[in-house]
Structure formats: structure tokens, C-alpha cells
Image (cartoon, rainbow, N blue to C red; front, side, top):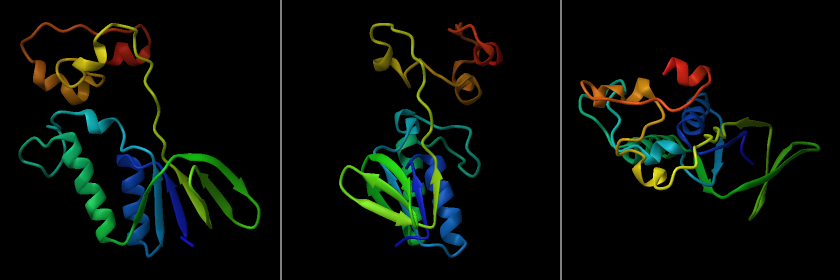
Length: 153
């Protein structure tokens, strides 16, 4: 039985697992996918990388580091969480118990319904000006949105 179960196998979940493993905990990560960073063509603004790195490679580097530290990764979908004597995480395939659970599930974006938008993600369509504005210097751009997030971008 692991000490900690991390629900979510994206960058935040894997980072949490790495820190817990380095603290001497037995860690299980459960997640059905690796997060939106998997769709990033290149990450240019990440500390310690002198050259841009593809999003999927950055994710894999983190997973490899976690595994090296003894973290177990289970690719399954979590369908329930309960508490009796221990915390229990139910997936489609099994039930896992632990003393603690870290929720690192990310959030879904509300995407506009524009035909072909998904095909252009990472090829000109971006959801993070801080991350990607560098690539569009000296070019005309548009921000789609009307909330505080869009205003900040």
C-alpha cells in the first residue's frame, strides 16, 4: 500500500510525486492522460533548458525522473474517492488505499466552438501569452475572450 496516491499524471501531479518520493514516501500516481503540455510543440521558457524542448519530451523527462525515484505510475481513470479506515481511490480497474491523496487533476479549458480550432493548437493557436508570445513577436495577434484572464493576456 502506498503512503500517498497522486491523482493526476500531468506536470503538477508528477512534480508532487517527485517531491513526495524524495521525502521518503511510497508514491502511486494514477492518471488517464499526461495533461495539456503533451500538445505543446515547443517549450521555450523553461528553466534549465538552453534550447526549446517539445512538450511531450518535457513530460517524459519528468516521468522518467519520478520512476527513477521509485514512483509507480498507473494509467487508469479515477472514478471515485472514499474514506473508511484509509483513503481509497477507485479506478475503472482497481481500488487503491493510502494514508493521503493529492488531487492534481488540472482543469479543462472552455474552448470556443470554432471549426478546425483543435487542429491548430500548437501551430498558431495558443492559450498562454506568457508561454507563447515570444514566438509571435512582430506579428499581428488577437486575444479571444472577455474575462479577466483574456484581459491579462
